Amino acid sequence: MAVIVVDMQGDFTTWKEGALAIPGSDASFVKKVEQATRELKEAGFLVFGTQDWHPPDHISFYTNHPGKNPFDMIQINGRTQVLWPRHCVQGTENAKILLDDELFTAIARKGQNPMFDSYSGFQDHGGMKTDLDMILQTYHVSSLVIYGIATDYCVNATALDAAAMGYEVAVVGDLCRGVAPETTDQAFAELMGRGIRVVQELDLPGLQRW
Ligand code: VGL
Ligand code: ZN
Image (cartoon, rainbow, N blue to C red):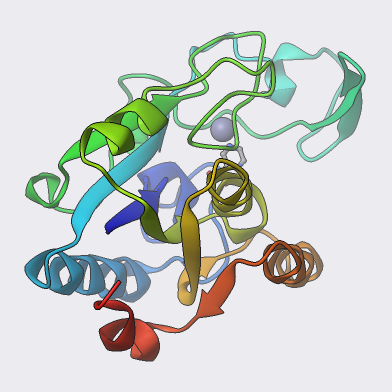
């Protein structure tokens, strides 16, 4: 049994005045996520993280598409791409993970190829795998508790991929924050539709028998 903490990085938080700050991601949210993660680790879960880690010329930045604005949608390689503010640029202060480093057994970086976005911690939009699945297999992990930011993008994509790959998955709703209410509601509905359990932090003690 293991935890995946998704993209708890400065640029996604109001706490750090991030470039792509997700509503409700203040210091108390981050501290709550850190405390819950510490308790899960103490209960015997291995803890893994994902980290959005883009080069400056990344395709998802509106600044790399002349005339475009933040949150515009464009077609790239036959799929819709949201254009984001520049965020989580490799090596920058706000690309750092905000939780205590010592909690993590390993961290999988994603979004490093300038040509492809990567919401999922398992693979980018071009189908290139990260190390995450291999790392989980090394530790014989079969069930995953997933939470972090953003519910409607990277948490959603990571949980859907995990379920599709055969992991038993629970997403902890109140340890997530979403970009927008409508897409966040859609994400929870989609997760439940794929057999993923959506639980709350209070339910976690019951999950520890996984
Ligand atoms: C994310 C948008 C762009 C996320 C990452 O972590 O959900 N969202 N890059
Ligand atoms: Zn990104």
